[in-house]
Image (tube, rainbow, N blue to C red):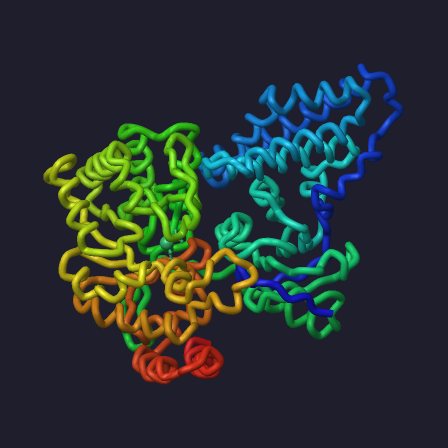
Length: 562
Ligand code: PEP
Ligand code: MG
C-alpha cells in the first residue's frame, strides 16, 4: 500500500515506522492518570512533577538545539518555558484540580482556552504563541499519562521512519539523527517549520500524508521517498532492496569544495541559504561557494525584543567570520503579518501576504530599518564580501527610498546593493531594476505564489502551486534575459530541486542558492551537465503550454544530468 503526501525534503529512507504523539490534542485520554493518587495534594504533586520534568526536557532540547543549530533555534524553543512559568496558565489549572478535576483534564481545558484566546488576538506574534501553548500542554499531559514524548523520540533504535500527526519544532529539533532516517506527517506543507528543518538537517520527509496513521500499524516496514512524496507500507522485497541501495548511495555524498563547472567548462556558483551562524558553518562544511541568502529575520524572531544596532553588528560579523572569506548576501528584515517579530507591532491584516511585508514594513518602521542598515554597513566595512539585498520590492520607488535612507543613515556604505525578484511587478520591470542595482536574486517561492495566486503553504493548493508551471518558467526566462549583464541568482527552493539544475542552467542562470545539505548534490549534477545540451532541452520545456507537457519535456534534462 502506498500513502501519498507532499515531498518536502529529498532522499530515500527505509525503516520501521514509529508513531509519535499520534493523538491530536482533542483525543487526549483524561483517564490516563497513572498511580493511585487520590487526595488533592497528591494530584497537585503529580502535576508539579509533570511540569518540572517538562521544564527540564524543554531546557535540554534548547541546549542541544543551540549546539546543533545555533542561538536562534534555541531561542524559539525557550519561548515555551515562558508558558510553564506563566501564572495565567498555571493558576487556573491549580484551581480546577482543587475543585475536583483530573490534572490532565485541567491542563487541557486551560491550555485549550488560553490557546483559543491567543489564536483570536490581533497581534500576529501573540497569535503564533497559541501553537507553543498547545505544544507545552501536550508535553505536560503526556507526562501525566505516564508517556514521555522525549523518551519516545530518544529511545529509538534501528532504522526508523518517524510518523506523526504533526511534528512541532521542538520534536523536530529533538530527533536522534543516528536512527531517524525519514519523517512523514499527516499535516503540514512545504514551507511548514518541520519541513524547513528537515531540509536543513538533510532528512527525507513527506508531509500532508492524510490518512496515514489510520492506514498503517506501528512497526511496519516502510520505504519513504522524499522526492516523490510517497510512503510505501510493507513493500515487496525488491522495492526494499532498491530503496536501501539508493539510501546508502545518497548518504555519504562527496563534498565538492570548490566552484564547479559543467562538462563543457561553464562555471556555476552553488551558494547556500542560511538563517543562523550554525547554518553558515554547515554550508561551508558542505562546500558552498558562499551564502546567497542570509535570512536576517530569524535573528529578530528568536530574540525576546528587537536586537539593536550593536547586537546586529555582532551577529552579522559572526556570520561573515563563519563564512571564512566567502561572499555573504544579507537580506534585510523580511517579515510581515505572516512572520511576526517580538517588539515589532504589525496590524492584523485581512491578507498578510498582500500586506505590509518585507521592504514595505521596514520603510514604515524607520528606526528598525536604520539600525539594520547601519549594522550591515559596519559589517561590510570589515568584511569585503558582504552584499545587502532588499526583499519584496515591487517598484523602483522603493529602491529610491532605500538609497535615500542609506545616504542619510549610512553614508559611504560599501556593500553591493541588490533586490529580490519575487513580486510579479518586479519581474515585469526587471530590465529597469537591473540598471539600478548591483545584482538580483529570484525568490521563486513567493514569485510562484504571486504569479499563480496560490498560497505556498496551503496544502489544498499544492497541485496548483508549482515552480514548473509554464507561466513560472517563462517568467524565469524573461527575468534572466531582462537582467542582461547584471548578475542574477535563484534563491528560492527551486534552485535545490533535483529536477531543476539542468533547467536553470539552460535558462542562463549561473548562481544557485540552496539549502546547505543540498550543495553537494547540486554540484554533482552540475558537473554531469553539458550546458549546450541543457539550453537546447530548455527551449523545448519553455514551449510547453500545459503543466503536464512541462513534465514530459523535463525528462530530457533529467537524462542529461543523470
Ligand atoms: C522566496 O520567496 O523564494 C525566498 C527565497 O524568500 P522566502 O522564502 O524567505 O520568502
Ligand atoms: Mg520571499
